[in-house]
Image 1 (cartoon, helix red, strand yellow):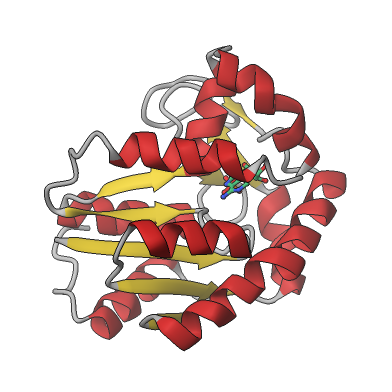
Image 2 (spheres, rainbow, N blue to C red):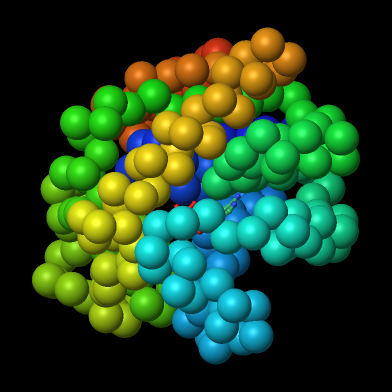
Length: 216
Ligand code: AMP
C-alpha cells in the first residue's frame, strides 16, 4: 500500500506525474480539480456550486473539498494505495488530511514562476477523455482534436492570465506554507520540474525507492 501527495505550482506537471505513478503502481489518482471540473462539465449540483469559483482561480471552500476527498477515499477501492493531487492547499486542509490519513511521502514539483504562465496558457484538455495536451511540449496531431478519442480540445476555464494571477497568489500565500509544514513533519521529495516528464518521473522513482518505469 502506497500513499502519496503530489504538490507543486500550476503547470508543474502534477497531473502528468501522478498519472504515470498511478497507472503503473495501480494507485487511485485523486485530483480534486479533475473531480470539480467533471462536476462542472456534467452540470451536477456540486458543479453549479463551484463553477464560478474555479473559473476565477479562487479556492473553493474547505468543507466542500474535504467532503470530496472523504467521499472518494471512502469508496476503499484503493487496494494498492492512492496519490492525492491538488490537496491539501492550505493549513486547514493539511490539518484535516494529516489527522485522517497516514502518508508515505509528499512529492513537491519545483518550477519557477517565470515558467508557469508560458506552460499554463499553452495547456489544452480533451473534452471527451480528459487527456492533457500542451501546445509547447505535447501537441495533438491535428489542431484542437484529441489524438485518442477525436473529441475537441478546450482550454480550462481558469487557464487565462486573470485567473492565473489569482491562482499564483493563492499558491504562494496558502499552499507553499503547507509544503514547508510537510517538510518539518513528512518525507518530502522535491524535484526540479523544469525537465521533461520522463526525466522527472525517473528521479521521483529513484528518490521514493520505487522500481523504474518499465512501460513507455
Ligand atoms: P487544479 O486542477 O488542481 O489546478 O484545481 C483547479 C481549481 O479547483 C482550483 O483553482 C480551485 O478553484 C479548485 N480546487 C482544487 N483543489 C482545491 C483545494 N484543495 N481546495 C480548494 N479549491 C481547490
